Length: 330
Image 1 (tube, rainbow, N blue to C red):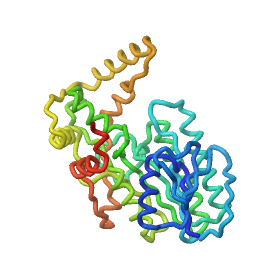
Image 2: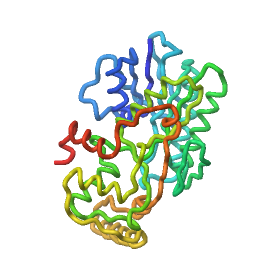
Image 3: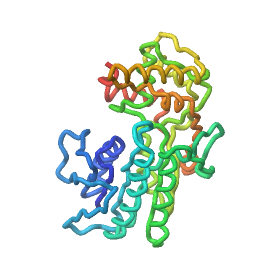
């Protein structure tokens, strides 16, 4: 039986991958392994099963069907990623132990194919264009743990010539029902409270979730034993250009302000203290403000060279998003 084992299967990217796998009838069975029940699915189709699984511990899931070892895939989406939001050790506890335990499980069941979602975080700051051949200079516990997890999975690959490993390094992913950076930018531009750090002349690589999923299926169909590839839209716009496109697409007319990032960090720190004093939480955090001015100039060179078609530039993705989930913008 062709089976997809998806660790972190209740998460955002997994939801869109599963829908695409169902649409294209890629697998006979899909197993979602996660510490949380799937929240994006209202009802799971009959050939999809949810299994509680904490990848920090040994994985003991047993199945009673014959597994097609050649055409089945194991996906590692399980991760601690939100920054800030966790202690430093938590990134390593989950991202490294998870990779080790998933490798061990892959060995146990004899599966031949692993797909790992890493991150562009291992590159660190990247004012100059980064491709898959660029050196990694991770600066955060998240980035360091993801870079090490890549190496852990490559150890699994090295143990047999009939194995395949695909590693994607996604940029900031956005799309329907995701309250992340791009969505927050849209809402701030609508309210007229968006601040362009240092004038917005920085590149912040971004990727639409539907394009990311298309790239996953594309790389699965390639023959390379090891694929490490970046996912960002191509071409990408700098932050200032992005705000122009968003304002035009949504007919926003309120002003956008150019503010030095150091000033924004001070303001964010004051607001954090103020919210704590009144017992409330705020998304405005100095770390997030610094990240807004943190350049991530990522080029998806592998996909470009292989002829992958990028269907979702920023403008096209916003239109697609509005068409399928207009309620996000009410």
